[in-house]
Image 1 (cartoon, helix red, strand yellow):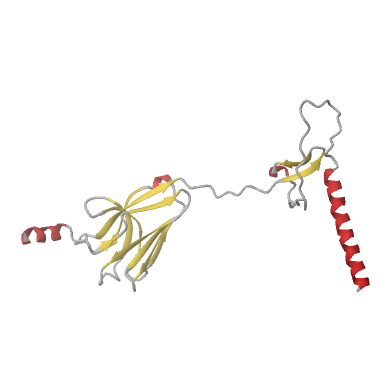
Image 2: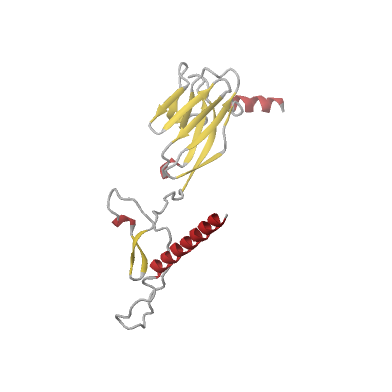
Length: 212
């Protein structure tokens, strides 16, 4: 039994030295970060993110730090080694469908020893649209407030919405052509009614102040 344990330790030297998440998920066009931990004594050794090749080896390094520089960047990939906490973080920006797959985060030991690493599966999901539709833009017409497409708005103008937007029902399709719209002046009448109420309130207040 002890011989089997020694043999396993010899064949899997980096199995427990570096630990990363088994799976990480990101959205198309977004970014994701992967945290991998390592053991004490590995602080000054280079940390890498690569595509797996042979057993516990890399086919090609995507991004890797150095003994002197704990930070490195290569195109959309960056890596930062927090040597005090013994954690290095790999960040992938601008996720594409081709970024999905199996990767390897690890510590580069030496040319004569196998790298200490762990496999991480990256899943790229379709991102949800964050587009916010523009506010309605339109004008008052015979049929009431009519919205127009925001693309037709003149450049440099702002959307000015009315203070009171009353929904005026449209005429029946069976109504004869040329029939006047009974609700055409409804917004104007409603505005006059509000002004009359304000005037009456002001008059009552003025009388009460004079009586006092």
